Length: 219
Image (cartoon, rainbow, N blue to C red; front, side):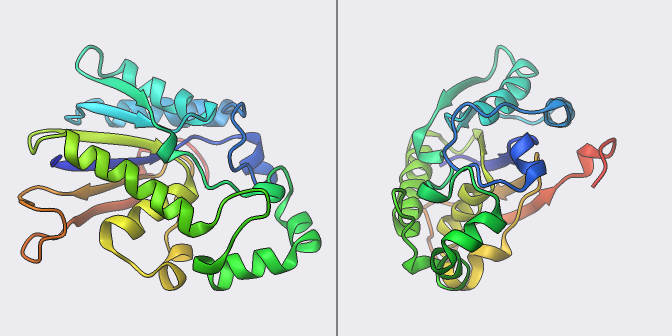
C-alpha cells in the first residue's frame, strides 16, 4: 500500500471561467492561467517523493500532469487512467449551470440533494462513477508498496469521490462539501496502514485543497 496519495485538480480552463459543465470533454486545454497554475504546482511538488503519476485521460489533466512529470524525470513515470476521468454528466455537458438548471431542473436538483440516486441522461450514475473511482484507487493500493507515494491528477467531481471512497463517507451528506480549486492539492497519508480500512489504521488528511503554492494567482 502506498505511503501517501497526492491528489491534484487540473489547472484552469475557459470552461471554468465561464462556469460551464465540462465533464468528459476530452480536448479542452488549459488556458494561460491554467498553464501558470500547473507550472507553480510542479515547482511546489518538485521535492515530493512521488513515484508515479496517474492522470485522467482529459487533455487538461494530462497538461497539468506533464508539468509535474518534467520536474521529476527520470524517477517518475505517468499512466493515463480512465477510472480517474471526470463524472460523465451526459446531456448537461457543454451547458452553463444556468442553462442546465433551466433545461434539466430535476436532474440538477437530484444531483444536489440526493446524488446517490442521480443518473445523468446519456451519462453515468453517481453510483457508477463512485464505483469506477474505487476501482482506480484499489489498483493503486495493490500495485504500490508502502515506501512509495503516488500523484493522481484529476477533476473536481472525481476528487470528491476519491475522498468519499477512501474515507467511506456518505455521498448524500458529504459530496458537495468537498471542493477543489483549479490546481488545488490534497494529501492523504496512508503510512503504517497494514490493511486497507483496518480499524487500527485509518487514512489521515494531511491537507485538503491547498492553493498556497498559487500565491501569484488571484482568487
